[in-house]
Length: 168
Image 1 (tube, rainbow, N blue to C red):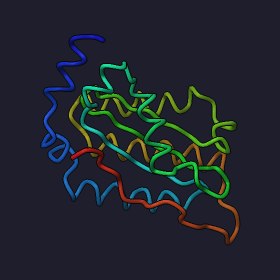
Image 2 (cartoon, rainbow, N blue to C red):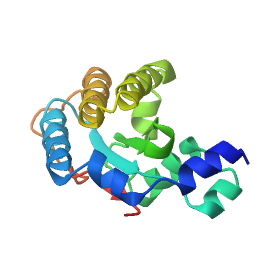
Image 3 (cartoon, rainbow, N blue to C red):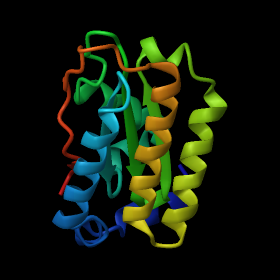
Image 4 (cartoon, rainbow, N blue to C red):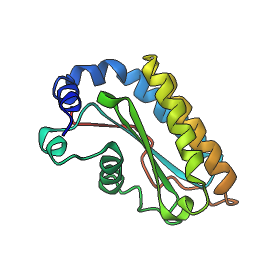
């Protein structure tokens, strides 16, 4: 276990998540997700977590592994066409992970998801949390519009649009 990583997570106070993502920002993200989902057939979930707990750090859980756990916990995989996508932020590390369900994962190159992540991370490093989130929603939405187009008269909202704040 890396000592610096451990300290960064253990010192990350929950109030920092609330400051970075106040209610108004969460509302803006939810509105952006709702609007984006009108343009394609996919479903987007957004989750933010301040830091990992000591047992997770001790066992070396990575941000990617945690994102996969959250993907499962939030049932992002539970859509009719397997087209759910999770945008996961781990604030203590300023790390972004995107997990896509098998229906869309097969169609989008991993480099495209990675590009969205890196763009968001650059904004996070600048402290532009809302801009990072909106950039991520727009980037994922653009990929979904290209690879999971909206089917005529079949738009449904299978997953909540409201962002999830984990462990407050």
